Image (cartoon, rainbow, N blue to C red; front, side):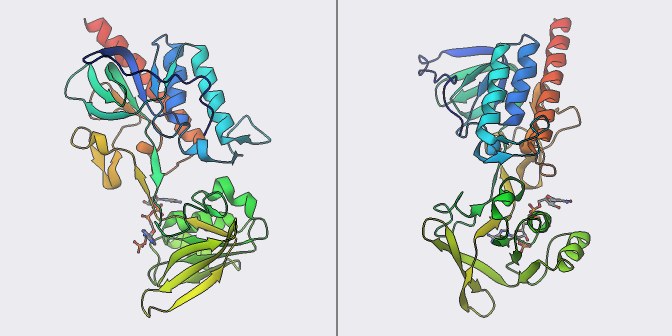
Amino acid sequence: MFNLGNVSVPSSSAEGEKRQVKVLILGSGPAGLSAALYAARAELEPVVLTGMELGGQAGLTHTIENYPGFPDGVGGPELGELFQKQAERFGAKVEFDSAVSVDLSSRPFKVTTENGEYLAETLIIGTGARPNHLEIPGEYEFTGKGVSYCATCDGWFFKDKKVVVVGGGDSALEEGLFLTRFASSVTVIHRRDSLRAGKVLQSRAFNNPKVNFIWDTVVTEAAGNGKLEHLKLKNVVTGAESTFEADGLFVFIGHTPNTQMFEGQLEMRDGGYIVSNHLMETNVAGVFVAGEVADNHFRQVVTSAGMGAAAAIQGTHFLEKVAAAE
Ligand code: NAP
């Protein structure tokens, strides 16, 4: 998490008080803060509600080595602070607050937060997604100490180490194959005996000498002393339990977008991702989306930032059209 230095923590508003804003942005990941930069440069004085995770998933990432402009890599929290600073330089306000409910039935949109209420002429949703967790003992204790949800972010730290990947989808195989660049071995543990992943990835994984598979098996516990050292496994067919030594446990069992509060108001597709067109527009005029809340395919800092910029540009055009029609 990046520091709270410039983030204002608003005091509870008086009952009934509603803040009117031209652009309200939900989420302080790369999507939300890039949208803030563009909306601020359009002099729309955007307000960003950080949500509970400052900087989003990128803010939890140790080092980001694939964001252009940083040839030596940049810390996730540091990059978040730079995004924020740049947006604030042009007038964006970043507030440590979370939306709890929205009413998108008419404009201005009503957004109720932990600390008050906003009336927003446009809304940019960048609330992101969270990786699904196994919810097993030791998983939280060893997160950042061997347990990870991002090979691109953390793979480098497992040079010549033995890692386990959980999952049988495209993410598990793609990220598992990426991990073979660093790890001495990558063992994919899948709860069934066949993979969900596409055939091309399957064949690449089967042909990679560093990749092994353990079928019909689930991980039931992560354990170690200060850092991950071994996993407890259970064969779901025979019930047999075993211990497996591992330095890393990478979990890729899908993501869940943070879209619950928009259910019934915005069109969504499988898995709860918000449907948008290439202009980042949703089915509600004036509501835009950016980043993982709408994208379960690329899921990169650079693509989320690009979507944030696009959403703010379209939001600006939308407000211009509304003003011209009045
Ligand atoms: P996914 O396709 O939903 O696969 C999740 C995998 O995790 C499945 O194999 C599932 O097992 C397993 N799983 C789920 N819950 C589990 C649990 N509690 N314990 C153990 N295993 C569990 O998710 P994804 O791989 O992240 O892919 C998401 C979407 O992005 C897909 O549409 C995918 O095609 C796309 N994607 C594409 C690419 C690419 O084209 N290169 C790369 C990444 C993602 P079961 O199979 O038994 O259900």
